[in-house]
Image (cartoon, rainbow, N blue to C red; front, side, top):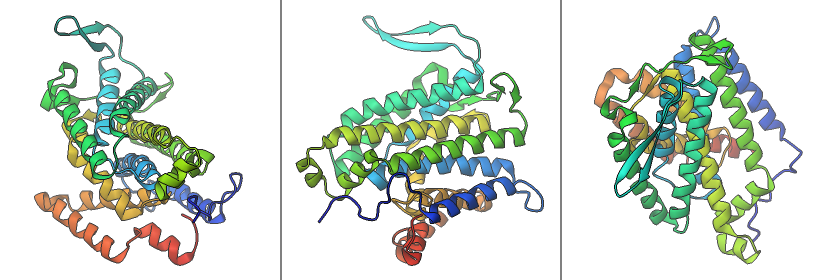
Length: 342
């Protein structure tokens, strides 16, 4: 049996179902905040940030077969770095000289684009270090290593002086994009978030459907066969892990400008659990599944907020229902029934 999915289309060909689904998504994003729908831009921005986070996670588990319980560390650390760069600017780097010290580099507050790029870069570098440690293991061992490292970084966030401890970093300025576009307004910020999301979404699609993506699918389906064909599977999985961490960091850095707040919630292990839930509800290994799952979970959290501590219980019931009724996820089942790619 061949390891590579035989339903893969040529690299230059985009299936009609993908084009239609992407066009519908763009139309919805354009029309949602406008009359007569007038959906809250803040809700839409939150949903898009988590949709990007779920797409990043899906790149790892859906196409590489690697389950990480520590993706909150990339999401959260990127948000803290972006918030610090946007509000303070000065950089503090730890170094060892008989004991740990901090090297302070004075810089002015940075523009939103620099802040997001800085947070994304830190997430990618952190993903490289974590990947080198974790990628040599598989299955539950890989998941537990990522969870342990994530918790270690969580406690480091509490201790680091630039994070504000349990208070986090508040009142983060949105600033001006490239010094021209004022992002303080909700609609201007919404347009910026939509552009970031769509650009990252298209890039993830191209990665998944590139020769590199096909090798990832082969590793997911039958790693020993991929090794026998001469592929260095650990290298491919490491690159996939770093890419996933980078996109997760982009989502976290963008979210911090939306809410103007970086908090411990962003880096807590429950955030890793939420992105797993979003991906499972939407559908593993589908392009649009994580988007649908993220929107569904964020909508649930928003509309059921009055239930307080019962919200996680409701989410658990939804997950059980989806697993029983939609074993491939909502989008996965829809694509299977219609025999199309989504």
